[in-house]
Amino acid sequence: MTGEFSPDWLTLREPADAAARAADLVGELPGEVRVIRDLGCGTGSLGRWLAPQLPTPQHWVMTDRDPALLRLAADGMPSEVTVSTHLRDVTELTVADLAGTDLVTCSALLDLLTAEEVDGLVAVCAEARVNALFTLSVTGEVTLDPADPLDETIQDAFNSHQRREEGGRRLLGPDAPAYAVTAFEKAGARVLSRPSHWRLGPALSALTAEWLRGWTGAATEQRPDLVVDAYLTRRTTTVPYASVGHRDLLAIFE
Image 1 (cartoon, rainbow, N blue to C red):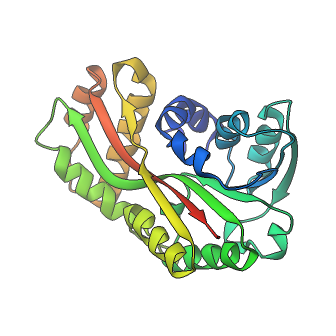
Image 2: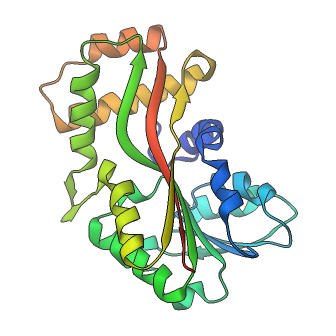
């Protein structure tokens, strides 16, 4: 794969992200949303999807630990909104950071965090009384058509990889969506949750093939005994239809 956070990969996946997100949750946002802080913003994909659905004026605070991605995000937002950038790891977010913020957003982020990091993020939102729209968290469910005998083995290995311990951090992986819902509810929020599955296949052949390479690559990193070369050749030669499980949540502090 071109890299989990590379601009090329983030650009390639943007159409699938936009099609998958649960747009009905936007209609559930209470009150005026004028200032939005986007965590782990990448190239700004979520902002480009959400900004046209909200009234103007809007100000976006794009937050990421990668200065190159921050520049791309700021330059790529719609001209109707104003943008500032904040070079910051999302796990270091504070209540003071959210002063004047109406909504915190993120996309494809929660599954990369630990339970403690999600708890910290939820606690900051709860203390600041700022609502959160967190989209496209991986659930671990993959369905391929046509099916292959190796599909389930690769899925299990991939999900174990997503739950790996890395640098002393035990990642939540596909447990993240349910964990975050529970954490927000314990913090007093009303939580709405929706499926937001990727729908891949021949119409998105480049993305589907690249996703397959990343999916199998993570599986073999977790289980080096898996032999997937022939499988990957079959799958990328004739691209299958694929449903890749994700989930969106909206946490509202009333």
